[in-house]
Image (tube, helix red, strand yellow):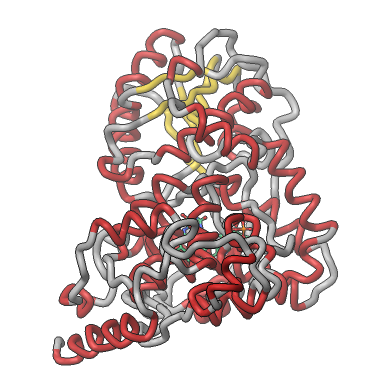
Length: 469
Ligand code: FAD
């Protein structure tokens, strides 16, 4: 019988359906540990919004563990070794992560601990189907979503059923301070994030319950409208593992089969697809999956990038999205596509710059989803939107925010403008603008680029790639 087992929490900040914790709790007293590791991820270390979420999530987890969570900052290998020595630990368990730097680090730690006579076991607690289990008949990875999902995922074993919370979880008494991790530092911005986000396992379960009681009923159609309550908003909870995809999948599968259920499950599968791409193509965050894009003539323009980041482009839907991101740490999926397309196509700024800003500002920043989605929008990804399909932000806004509820919320200086001009204020007469209290170029910017000429320039840039093999 083992006396003490370390459960190393990573992206599994929950007690229910936690496979590694479940086994540990059955076998021994558990020493629950979280380590902030800023060394191994290199340039992919957590951004500011993620750190704020993590801080809140650790507070919630620590509360659920009766204040017994051990937290430290530093290199996990040496921290785990010290804890093992101090507590006489014989085994360390964790749930697997799939970021390339994590895989490398975890392999190294596993080998070292095993050489020291410590048992190490890892489990799948984050994915419905792990990437190494879903391959084409010829043993190569899928690069296109639909066959990945239909022929790969759905025709293999169904996902693991969720586990309950450990029946008896005895934790080792100790005292460490989450404040000492210094995860938070910008009080004004963080209080804005706090006003918009409930963090932790209980909040995640509550959000799922709420979504199942209402939002999912019109998911397929409603998910594209940013002002509607038809999306789950579970992504940060899934990223930090406050809820598992298995819990979500089976809760949704318990509902009658319809287009909404099917569509929601396929979106969960897009997350699986991103992880599949990151696992098999570990350069995904840096390198274009389609090599010909290496020759793309991107523009380096710090001023335009800053206007985009600050939500001052003069295109109301783009500005609403970028301000939603800044104020809440999240952005609706449809609007993420619009702002990303605007950056990489109308401004022709490299998708790396967009991904980096999202990485710092999103509470759901996720290396797999963020990298795969940016490559998808930029047209250089595996199963990407074709580059020549360029979103028109005005048409998109008219279609998906027709009454302008979303724009009015995040761009209040335009709120008095009628629906007719809300999406395109530069076309309104001076009189119309005046009666809405707007002075273009003063109270709200004029468009920073012309849509037609920037579109043509983007298409010409894309055409220049045709000669590249
Ligand atoms: P729902 O519609 O309720 O979907 C449920 C879950 O399915 C989500 O929580 C998410 O885990 C998954 N999902 C849904 N849509 C997608 C998708 N298109 N790709 C992958 N998984 C999906 N998602 C992140 O989690 N982290 C990111 O860093 C991230 N960066 C993105 C960057 C860009 C440019 C774009 C276009 C999309 C990005 N996404 C990212 C995907 C998507 O926008 C979010 O997952 C979604 O908006 C989360 O909202 P939700 O939880 O309400 O989604």
